[in-house]
Image (cartoon, rainbow, N blue to C red; front, side, top):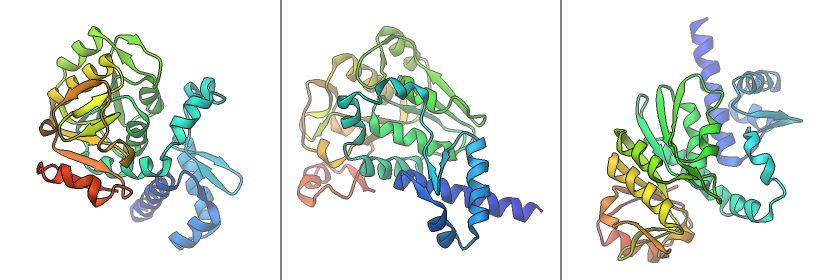
Length: 263
């Protein structure tokens, strides 16, 4: 019986990983890939849905979304940002989650790429999430194995950010094992930059408090400089980007001895 439970658990993890990478999964494709019957796949999908980890639909499943997003479903600007490099961000999110160990305290800044990390972290246990993003906190609303510390502050427009002095104080009082920050630009001389000063302040605070500091950025952010300075490039340990980043784009970062991972 214990062996059967372990096999079922591994199968569900594989299904979730496929879902995180692809954005949706098919019963028939999963059955062929996993070497099990469609009935077994449906049973796994039902169990994952009951845990709040996905939503079943005819013939397969899709990621579950917080009701927080409903207000933005017909917002063209939101939808454009949400879908921009969506596949790349899903791959980055899954790769980033592999750097997290059970028991870690993990900081996630606001953003579309860090939201994908949050979704991938649902595969972990006994992890504490520190975030200034309302939507990321809501991603874990039904979790019984992860804890969330949402920083205080005022709610900003854009990507569900909570900003200001209260947010900074919460972060300063927290010991963080690993921080993942999204950026609007990253460039060897300009370092990490964001579009808004308050957002930059929160990201910088998360980096200062962390033992390990990771930037997650799709290839379009490389070589760009936004308005607000976050921190110099040498303050981070690793950049996780996607395979769309060319050798030419990565060369200036490698010359600074910055570790780079492509997903």
